[in-house]
Length: 327
Picture (cartoon, rainbow, N blue to C red):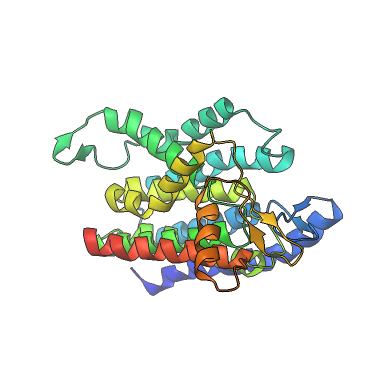
């Protein structure tokens, strides 16, 4: 891989970083804001920042394609890169509608599922990935059943672990950075660049999204990240380690299912800004993090950014463990 191609990664970062202040200003003027549930004053914060992230990563990928095509006369993997872009844009439709109408008032669960399944079609029609798994040739079962289920699972569950400043963007940075390294090691450097375009865009977003957040990502970003993770896992034939990296989200789904997927991740906020368990039982890793921190901290005071850091720490542990087991 020629270093010139790394320009695409830089463009993703600076595009997102430079456009976000403009988005924040315009969104405030047009009242595209929501309440920060973990601040005592319930301050208003700009929403829908994920659309800028999607713009940044798309521009980076397109520039990567352009450099390959016009400078290096290389059109390898071109169809796969456009398939990834198609998956990103189709999955983001759900996020855009949710961000505009509100996830409680927007699309029904059935319509969400149908649209996300449709977002998997670009990968299905090009027969992406390898249909042979654990020595068994799955034939058409892989593109027609496993690919849409993989995209649906990653896209929807990545949206579960959310609601705290910097959590979604930080998790995206960690998982996609790990997948970039895996694809590099396994000889798919082009997928590494695609993953790092999203990482760069997310790093720029994180500057504005970390505690105390100036902007929220919205569902458009969480759906896009989940869709990209699934696409990279399928196209890079690294499903096993990708699923392992996704263990926090599998656990989150299990915990959320205890409450019929109706219990929210938000905590109760005290007057001093510290957090309390919102329920008697644990319905998410966020709740588990609060409970653990309350047990280990002498002050028994738990704050939002500490919850985020603990979840990030768990994700890093899973990633390191995944490398030791699979690579």
